[in-house]
Amino acid sequence: METSATNGVSSSKKHVLIIGAGVGGSCLAARLAARGHKVTVLEKHDQPGGRCSLLRTKDHRWDVGPSLYLMPELFEAFFKSVNRDINDYVQLDRCEPTYNVFFSPNEKGKPSDPPLQLSTSLPSLGAQLERYERPAGNPDPLGSFLGFIKESGDHYEASVKHVLLRDWNDLFTAITQWDVYPMLLRTQILRIWTTVWARSAHFFYSDQIRRAMSFSCMYMGMSPFDAPASYSLLSYAEYAKAVWYPKGGFQTVPAAYEKIAKEYGATFQYNTTVSKILAEEGGKTDSVQGVELKDGTKIYADVVVSNADLVWTYNHLLPPSNYAKYLQTKELTCSSISFYWGLSEEVKELGIHNIFLAEQYRESFDEIFKDGKVPSEPSFYINVPSRIDKTAAPNGGDTVVVLVPCGPIAGDKAPDGYKDKASFEKIKAHVRKQILETVQARTGRNLEPLIKEEFVKDPWDWREQFGLWNGSILGLSHSVSQVLWFRPGNEHAKYKNMFFVGASAMPGTGVPVVTAGSGIVADRVEAYLQGKRRRSNIVPLLVIAALFIAVFVAIFGLF
Image (cartoon, rainbow, N blue to C red; front, side, top):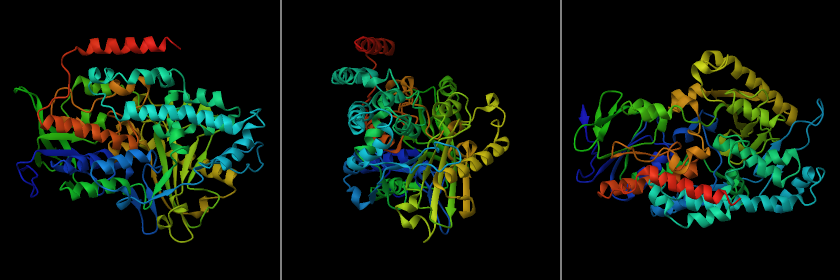
């Protein structure tokens, strides 16, 4: 069976086929449909969002993946670009306090101190910092925080302007945007030569506050001991821009993208699995013609964009290539064991966002990123959406999501207990027990008898259900060698009409980042359809790379 998927849209329009209705796919569909193109989105699940989907039962609603709405201006920019008012689609509530951070008791067997409450209110935050920083010898805890936020704010503003909103697919064009270089001088190359932990230790005296101001690297699937200091920008996002909650769950954001795309005429086909991308070689130009579905149906289009995991797309949907094999060797972000609990009672000791930090903090990250394991003593995150949105749970109950970072699937090289899903069950059961014991020790509440509904996702579930390579929940890592031009591009090098949008492609991972990145992809698709190639073939790429590295080293040498 063959189809062009016209669905009543004029056949004279250029047809763009998007694989996946995740954040990137849904957002891109809205952008391209708003520009007048015929857009078809194929999604294997029954709802938009991908990892940002919802899990529902009769009584409870859980966000499967992201739960922190950060960098609001990037979302607002998208809605403005498609002539829509964000307030007509998404209702946001501010999360205050931003986090409750739980540390282990000072002495075993004794109750923990009240949680550290991190807030956007400076008077409240100052009092909280005093608890730990003043005894550690810091003469001005709030002043230290303001210095830290000033630096992270420099990282944030420079990164948004010069990285997230710039098109790095064409290196020559990117490095000849001369306003980048004064920024690199001013920010000491965004301090990529040091780490988030090192900068936290530079400003703060106590181990507790150093940990509290560095754990947000977990949201990028990285260790604060490895993550470049530029990623302290997340702290600025949290405390200067605030953390928000979309009423109805985070899935309302990609659902809004879908709604706008449909308003402009885009079509979404759910429960539709793509088995391969149809590629043609040997003609005047190598190109893709469309896709073949699991049932054998072929859908043709002028452009194909994959919002499926990039590494998975290259290795399972596109024809075999050396580049596909090369991508398998790239550094990945972590995976997770995620527990979804429906509780019969409210646990008011927990706020909406709760962080439980390991005492052996560095060791816990090393076990994830160097050993590929679940930490012996994990740090973990608990989200309680019902604390701010009563529609997430029945009256008198709570909805809880527990995210425990762990190493991605390592295959034959994995340590014992990590080789397959069956052997991982014992580890998963042990982690569940650890979480319950830690929560009880630090809050005084035993959650075990309150759990009336439970779902669990592990690295194998992330791989099988969402096509995430080796179960890596945030895609390729954001190490220095995997960002900007060094990250997989938004265009296929061989097939001129094949594009990519999502976490592992430029500019990177995270819902606001992918939202912003979809604008770059939309411009590239538009340029292709209008016959305006955005690639530069004038200067050999090796020469360009050498120039970029030379400038980079020259600036670095100043510090």
